[in-house]
Image (cartoon, rainbow, N blue to C red):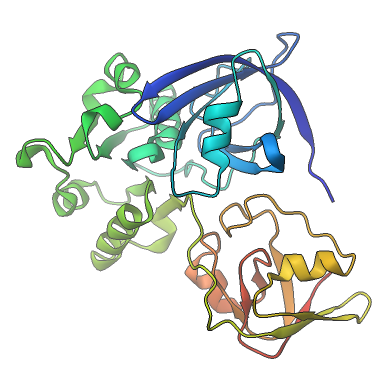
Length: 321
């Protein structure tokens, strides 16, 4: 199975901040690209057969381009190194159609945007969309140091600059993020949006939940998978509902890989349980959820899971395939 893709040209590549490169994609003939809204991301097909997801960070009304920013991750799986080192201005690359699993809540009375590090990419896009529509919001952008902050000049020049606050770990203690105070100051009914490193996001979400923020007002997007495989993983089986075929899933193998080895292709993208591309219905059995895509309620329901990373607590899972 394959997703719809576009071939675009790298119109610009630039150094946005320390270890962060920006990329601007346009169509070869200058025609508009498919529309997107704040929070959307695209798949980028990289050298070596890698596919990675990157949030779109330009204003959605700039319909002739897509902009992304990528942090070089020396400990990652190679995608950031490939795009930093091998994708050049003027190259053509293949990308997926925009998808949005991190949308703005249209009826929220107020929006609180919290970005950590490279998580500013979707958050900045949200701020620009909210400002252009006249919606009330506040934005807080946290980073380890000022030289690691992307889009500072763009934010400084924006009409919403008075609603944005910068926080750096190596600055004066007084300007560091006071999360309890920020949450306490939010008007009733505020919706919170957070994106950034896992530790930052978990701290924000835990703090909000401790203050009784309802889950439907918490919106977030993880950049990496939640749980890595371990030596404690065990083998199990999956049964394909449409054919009755039973497939063994060894302890060291993902469900997606086991299915592919038996001629059953499941559409995947991130392979980390982040993007939601491979979500599959579970008809019988108990999934062992290891994704960052499903909500806690969806995971507890146990009727869907991510075969790219999740496993099974029961000996058999019956999948709606």
